[in-house]
Image (cartoon, rainbow, N blue to C red; front, side, top):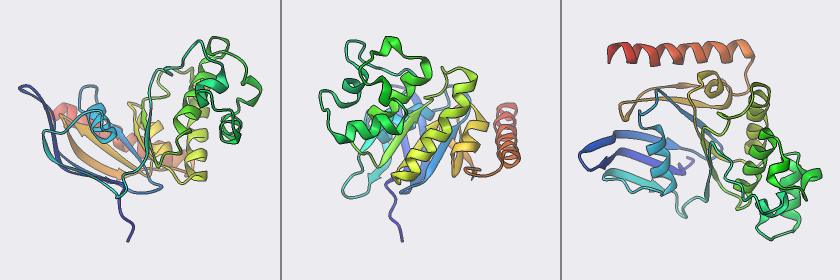
Length: 230
C-alpha cells in the first residue's frame, strides 16, 4: 500500500486565544492533486503553512513520509527578483541543463535573458512555477497562484501545472476560491469552514467540461449551504 507523503490527524493551530484551525485530518498521497476550497478566513492558508513547515501546530499530529518530502510553495504574487534575469530567477546563478529544461517546460526559453519587468503576468507566474520546480519537489503547494491573472491566461495555466505534475509525478495541494478551478485541477476537493474540513468529494481532473462544471456546482452548493447554516 502506498504511504502518504503527509498526514494530518486532528490538527490544531491557535494564535493566542484565537483558534485558526481545529480537528483537521487529511492525507496527501504521491502523485495526487488535492484542492482546499471555502470562504476567506476559513483556515485554508493556515493548513498549507503548517504542511510547509512555516507554522508549528499547537495540537494534533502532523507527520511526513520518511524521508520527508521536498516541498515548494507557489504564491499568488510571483515574488521574482527584479534585478535578476529570467534564467537567474530560476537557477540563482546555476545555468545547467536542469534550468534550461525548466524554462523549456514552462515555455520561457526565448525569454531567458530578459528581466521580470519585461514579462507579462502569465509569463511571470510560469517563471515562478519553474523556480518552484528547481529543487525537484515531491509536493507542490499552490496558494491561489492564478488569482491575479487575466481570464484567458487563467484558463491556460491549470493545464500547464497539471501536465508538469503528471510528467514529474508530483503531488499538489491547491488553495483556491474558484470551485471550477478546483474541480478541473484536483483528484479530491476538500471544503474548509471555520477552521476544519467539513466535506470531501472527488474532483474532475482530466474529465470533460460538463463533468467539471457539475462537480464545481455541487461543491459551491456545499459551501453556500454551510454559509447559510452558519
